[in-house]
Length: 179
Image (cartoon, rainbow, N blue to C red; front, side):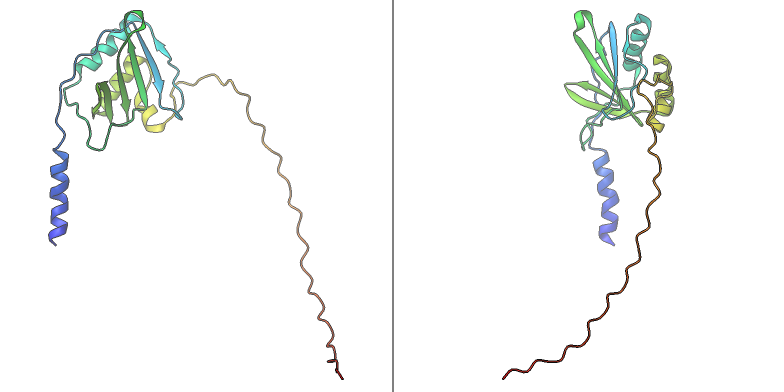
């Protein structure tokens, strides 16, 4: 009985171990490159070069509450990454989103919880249903199919195997006599 009451208390103590940190503001960017986690379907976006949308993304990142922390189990892996590039292509920061969280890289990999409303707001800035992408793992906007469709293999009717016939038993052989 004592062990079962200790486990919830231990988990509660561990959950409070992370400290929330204020990260430096996201620097302005001229270009925002949008990429996905390897193995996930690509998004219809590649680079955001429109100044208004790039500024809106920077503003969105800077408007998030300062609940950033480094999880005790390690950094969370984002599904969609926003790589900010400033003047002359210099890196200005990285921001990511995954199911239920946002992430930033500022010396370390930080993350914080994200609500559905926050993820949908981010999706409106980039012009796609980001929530649907994160929950269904499929891009909402259809991309042109560049690969020829796979031709199905014709079905082959299996050949029935003959039923085994029993082997005849050999006739009894009389024992041989030795002199």
